[in-house]
Image 1 (cartoon, each protein chain N blue to C red):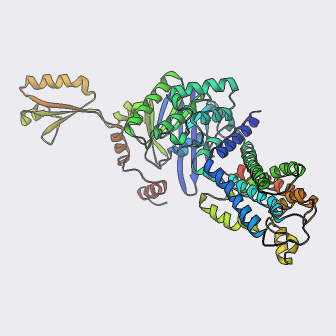
Image 2: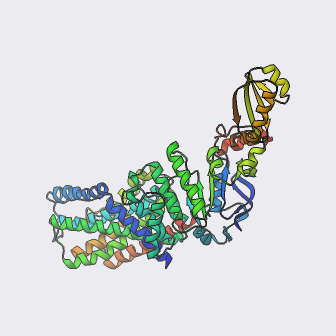
Image 3: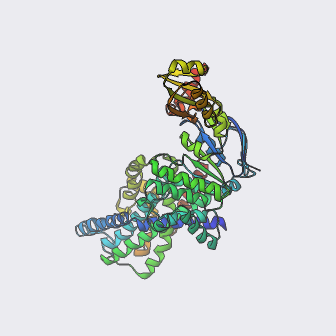
Length: 250
Length: 323
C-alpha cells in the first residue's frame, strides 16, 4: 500500500511539474506545429505519393504525434539528472520506499505527460486538416501510453549513465534525432533503398510510427502484429533495464 | 537510552579513508554536534547513518535499528536536512511537504494536520502556496527543517544547517533548532564548521579531523582542555603589579592572569590590587572558544583548515610520514 502511494506521489509530481512549466509546454506544442506546416503543407503540396489514397498531411500526422511522444518521453526520463543535480533526488532516495516504486512512478508520470501532449498534437493535426476516424483515435491512445513508457524508460537508462546534463545535447543529436528521422515518420519506408530500409528496421521508433499510422490508414509498411509486438517488447525490455539500472546506482 | 550507537564505523573511497574507525554514542534528546573543517568526514559519517552510503566496515544503530540490515526502519526514524538544497522549486512549499508526508506513509488526515503544524513551526504558513523558487535562502532552509520533521522522526540530522546564510537568518535558524530541542523531545545531530554554532546549540560535541574523533565532550569540557579563562588587566604601575601577581604574563603593556573561572576570581584580583595600591584602569575577560580548542588539538585554525578531502589526505600523509 505505502509503495503504491509512493508511485502515486512521484507520478503526481511529474504531472504537476509538466503542466506548470508553461514555456516548455508551449514550446513543445509549437515545435510539432512547425513540422506540420513545413512538411505537411510545404512539402505535401509539392510531392505526390504513389499508391496512396490519403493526403500527405494525414500520412505524417501519426509520425508527428510519435515524434512528440519520443521527445517528451526521453526528456522526462533524462530529467532525473536534473533532480540529481538540484539535490531533489536525494530527498526521494532516502525516503522509506523502494527504488522500483520510484522508477515506476517516474515512468508512469513521464508516460502520462507524453500521452497528454500526444493528444494535444493529435487535436492540432485534426484542426489543421488531417483526416482520422474516432475509432483510429481511440486505438491510438493505448498505443501512445505503451510507446511513451518505452521511451521514458530509455531516457531513465540514459540518465543512469550520465552524470551531468552536459551530455544531453549529444544524446539529442546522435540518438533521438536519428531515431526520429530514420523512422519513416515523414516518408514511406517502401520506397527507400534497401540499405537504408535495413537501418530503419532496427529503429524502435519505426514500429511506433507504423503502429500509430496503421490506425489512421488501415495499412502500414509491415503488419500491425509485428509493429505492436515490437513496440511491446521494446517497452518491456527498456523498463526492466531502467529498473535495474536505477536500483543499482548508489 | 541511546538514540545512536556507532561502532568502529569506517568508510573508504579507494585510497582515501573518509571516516576512520569512529565509535560514539548519542543519547536520546541530546543535541550533538560534529565539528570539523570541510572534508573532515562529517557528511560521510552522516550519510552512512542515514543509509545513503554503505559503510566499508563497522556498524551503527539508529533508534535501535541496524543501519545495514534495517534501512527502511532507520529511514522512518530519522529526518534529514541535507547540506545542499533538496527541494523541488517548481512546487509550492506546501506541496513539497505533502509529498514528503506521502512518501513517509502518513495517513491522509494526519497528513494535513501535520503539514499545517510544521508550517506554523517555521512560520511559513503565509507563503505555503507560493512556488519554492520564489523563497529566500533562509525560507528554503526553514522549509527543509519543517519537511524533516513531518513524519515525527526520533532523530533529526542537520548537515551544516546555516551554511551560506546571512548572520540574521542564521540566528533565526538557531532559534528554531533550540526550540525543537526543547519542545519536540527529539535527538538532534548537527554538523558544522562554525564554532559559535556548535557552542551555542550543542550539549556535546565531537571534534572530527581526518575522519577521526580527536576529542569529545561538552563545550565546557572541551574548552577546559586548553586551560581556563584569562583576566586581562591594564594597571597604573606595571612593575609593581608584576610583583603582586607573579604568575601573570605581560603582553602589550597589559597583564594576563590565567584562572579556572574568571567571574569568581575577579573580585580577589581587585581586592589584592587595591590592598597593594595598584589602580586597575581596564579589565577584560577572555574565555577560550572552540576555535582555540581546535587550534590547540590540531595546530590549525578551523577556518584555515578548509581543504578538500584529497588535500586533507595528502597533508595527512605528509604529516604522518608516507602512505
